[in-house]
Amino acid sequence: MKTELTVKGMTCSGCEQRVGQALTRLEGVSDAKADHKAERVVVEHDPTRADEQALRARVIEAGYEVA
Image (cartoon, one colour):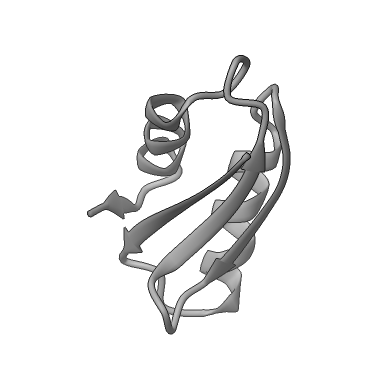
């Protein structure tokens, strides 16, 4: 399943990496691609192991806001 989240606070490619790495370390996430200019991240995941609430929580833990 693919889920797209709007992420506020990313300002550079380093932020993209931080968000992507935080999400891919979550069990059930196979890929995460963040784009700071578009303020979004697209996450490929197994919804039975990583639901949208878990994805949002992980982004917040990484220091960013989910709109």
